[in-house]
Length: 83
Image (tube, rainbow, N blue to C red; front, side, top):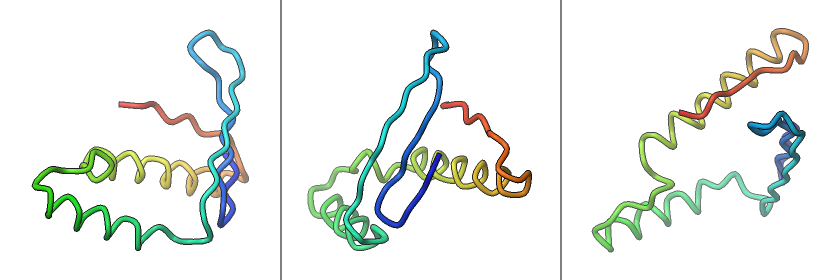
C-alpha cells in the first residue's frame, strides 16, 4: 500500500493468488467535511450511510494499525484479513 495526500495504491493477491492492483484518488482534502456532510444527511434522512457504520471505522483502524506495524518493521508486508 502506498498512501499520498491525494491517492491510495493497493497491491494484493486475490483468492487465486493472482496479483491485483487498485488505485483510489481523492480531492486534496482530509475527508472530514465529506464525513460531516454524510453524517448530517443521515440524520436528516433518518437512515445511516453504510460508510458511517461502526464496522467501517473498525476496518479503517485495522488498516492504520497494519501501516504502523509495517513502519515499525522497516516496511514489512502486512496482511489485513477482511472480516
